[in-house]
Image (cartoon, rainbow, N blue to C red; front, side, top):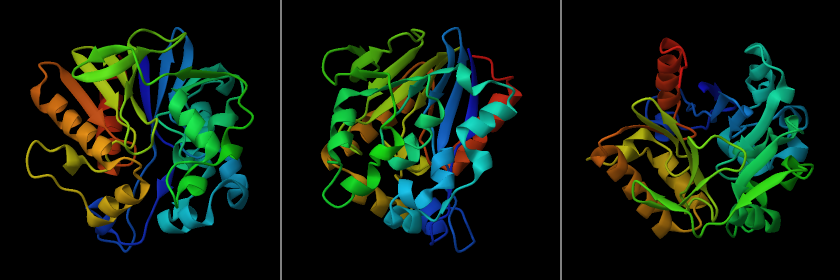
Length: 285
């Protein structure tokens, strides 16, 4: 397998370093970190960021509240389908999409790939369909128009499964290589999950929105910019579960004998480091 790191959506919230911890400008810089995996099962996307329909019709597809709060930069060149074409692939060869959860900034590009099977936890799909993702944000975070044309869903229960480095209910994904696993990481949303990919010498773990800033995964001296801390609190549905899973992720990185390349969906520094490293390594997995 080969892996490409894609930024499929840039957000520039007001507050600069209060949101990203680094910007000197008045606006912060957050990304939508997605993966494109070349495999024998065809092309696989992990999350999709914003899609072409979001770019073309933002007022129909996205809530005005989040468009303003996140200062979303809807750039056609950042859509997954545009980047896949630039890499020389046919978008029709995207056969599978794994979504960590169905928030608007993770699921917007799903319908750009109508032939793909969409993999997600059954709980996330049910809650998203009912728009029950939090008292205030439920109808704003979940936008059914982003996925209502999907013909092929593959849904996974949160119970059962296997253990993986201290995480429970871990599952293989139907029709995908056994090196790719779905890791429940609930708390940010009821059915949120990470995606682990076996690579030489260890694992890569896309943790989605289980955390938002690399400082949250430090072995000591937890750090998260106040803007992001507030955003996480607003979006969470179960604080106890979210913080417990963050603690387990920190323990995973600090204690396992295997290398784990852990990253979240929105940290621009993590994205830049992994994208550069991937290019330097020839993107071989």
